[in-house]
Amino acid sequence: MINSDEFTNRLKKILDYYDLSAALFADKIGVQRSSISHILSGRNKPSLDFILKITAVFEEVDLYWLVDGKGHFPKKTANDDYSSTPTFAASTSFDGKKIQRIVVFYTDGTFDEYYK
Image 1 (cartoon, rainbow, N blue to C red):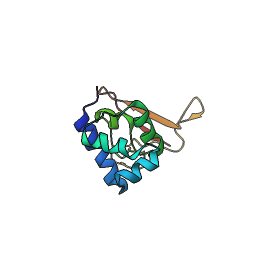
Image 2: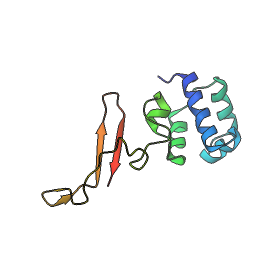
Image 3: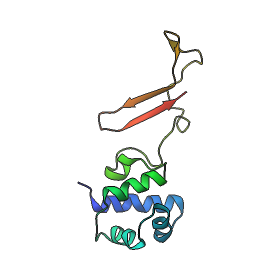
């Protein structure tokens, strides 16, 4: 179950990050402006459709982060954090196949993707 207060805080972070008013944000994701107002005030909880609209429009918003605070916002990419990104030689291959992507799954349900 979604904690409304924590979800509201994450939604406010998204608005601040993109420097959007609640009305502009509602227009961008295609919902009524009152929907945003009701969620921000704690009157209503977000629907799955609402959450999916956010992640569809704003690719930097991680679904798991938005729903339960696990993960990162904005999403980390392979180029974001070189200190924790494994490095591979350009010729690294297995049975003649070159590595394209590595996905690391963590016990808390989050994951990181690393692209070549």
